Image: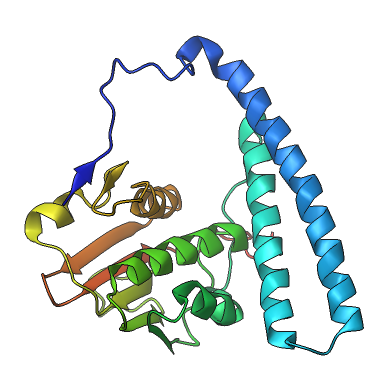
Length: 244
């Protein structure tokens, strides 16, 4: 059954407009404390790596996941302080390839991950952290659409004049899950709209916000029983932004 977890406008959660400054302070404090916890985790990972030759791939993925969590807390701190940075040019295919092991673990045995990466995809107008968030949300959404087994494919394509969106690189995630009807698809990117019992309804909303903030577009195709395909169309970074 579909659930729309959006609340009425009059709902009061204690974070009204007059409390924005305390809210920012709280977020910054939580980000600081989370970073302290992650520092301990990172130290433990390094100790495990030095003392044990068991599961080197798992330790490497754990290190990557911890680094990603640290980037998230840094982003929270910057957001709370109002010091967000401009988008930088992360290599699209390179970012997917670097996180392939972590993405396979995210699928948790519910599906196979297949990569189809274009070496000419080039840099896009997102930094590594934002691109990692984009990937994680897309793959998690695809995983949740699968039944007991299935396939999740991640594709990248470089800008092409023959594309439906000339000049934009494409990041596509396709799953062989249950798919969505037309009504559900129209609402898929709404904040807090979910069809899952325990879903927050924020994953695809975050995808849309990240892509549009970078000057890109998102398209989605889905049919009941035929899976879902979500494509993020991303522009190249501004001149001089690569590696900034």
